[in-house]
Image 1 (spheres, rainbow, N blue to C red):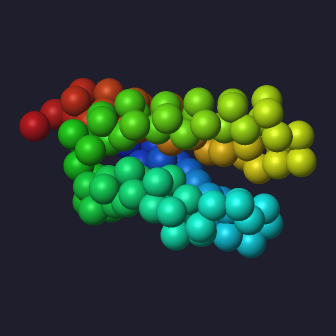
Image 2: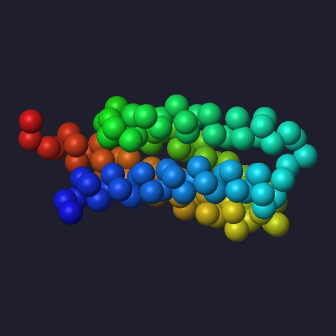
Length: 116
């Protein structure tokens, strides 16, 4: 497996796990006082905009995903700081968002270095 496919696989794995984590966190493990549909639409909609481009391996989508994922990093930091009972989920969100960030940036760099 070459480096490009490895970082793409890591990015997609982190992406899928982050989607699953957010659904399980707010839907099952720690329901919010707000309606579930509202919470999930706010948290999942930005990620779902990138779904097709991420699956196709679009370099442009990976580039802007590396900026978008910083929202989830900040969200995880805020939740870890303010909500001790959800700290484990917030730490998982931080780790997955860092995985997606590093993977997306590496994918963009390796894709631009690829001979045409």
